Amino acid sequence: MNDSDNALARLLSLPDLKNSGYANTATEIASQPEMWRRTGRLFYELAPEIKAFLGSSPRLLLSGAGSSHYVGMSIVPALRRVFDAAEAVPSTEIVMDPQSCFPREDFILISFARSGDSPEGNAVVELAEKLRPGRVRHIAITCNPKGGLASIVKGIGDRGLVIVLPEGTNDRGLAMTASFSSMVLAGFLLSIAYRDGPEKCVAVADSLSRTGQNIIGAFSDLAAMLSKEGFCRAFFIASRPFFGGALEAHLKVQELSGGAIVAKAEDTLGLRHGFMAAIESESLVVLYFSADPYRRLYEIDIAREIRKKKLGKKTIAISDSAEDLTNLADYIFETGNGSVVNDDYRALVAVLPGQLIGLFSSLSLGLKPDTPSPSGIINRVVSGVIIHPYPNLAEDR
Image (cartoon, rainbow, N blue to C red; front, side):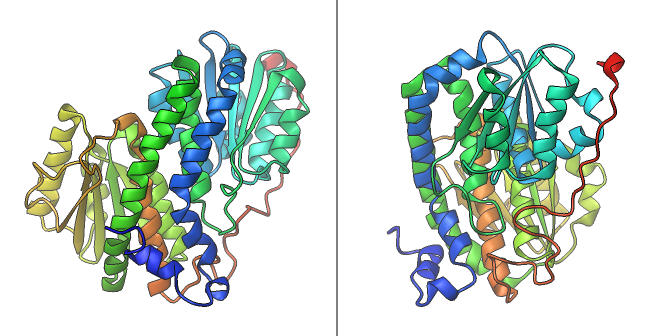
């Protein structure tokens, strides 16, 4: 398929794009393969500094709110193959219960943020400094060099490292798209820089960029078609290594539809434990398939069960290969284009369909994807959060 011969490209070629209400979101979705290439080159340059800062077998705590937490969820399985300990905890939870969230041992707090102005995200850094003095170092991965997070971590001195992702990742649209996927890639590249070195950072980023380009071009036509059919619920079902991508996919559909479509992400085996009851006749079901033969057996089982029970309005199977998926979904979308994506990196594949379904559903609902919440219930940067002073409990450290 020609890169310009797909629904997203056609959308971006329409006249008066500036006043369309979707220009930012659509452009940012389309820009992701290029942002990934640039992120790979950034980490090529930073790899020696990153490796030196991480030191020997660090314990990692990944923090972020909303989509930024899903970044951590997306990369933790891969990080645990390289580092002794890695855990993702939402900054929203840490703020309310920091003592049970912060490790007692020395650790590195990795904070993810698009704008760097999230009240909870910045409060976590300050709480860590207060409650674990001398035990914590900080890495900020952000898309905004002028945000509060970058400023706070820079002020910490040699215990802090700020990584600002390439210009263009700091989305202007409400929904995080290029920012999310670029931060996920940055998380993967942290471990690659630590274990494999600069050249591998570029190779992985370029390979994922090519796959992403293929998916965005080909899936946008399917997303546009599905949005015209309409559905009131959407389910994204994935296995653990790339479940974070499914979580972000469900959020994109819910955000970009202004809440008109209620979305849910669930892990493959967990779906049977009550969640399956919510899949009704007007639901879209998106099933992600692994490259791991063992894991894939369970994924095929759940697809057969959904098919047998005739759940949902439409089902989509997303897989490197359709070889063993005949009759298991209404649509089988092959992502691999002859190649196989490592499951550790598959969260980047998983999020793209959610972004595209969200974009075209928003347009079908008559909304403006750049600002899909007409009443202003949700905003680009969370507001209204009061950070209350934490009591001095030195004996509880």
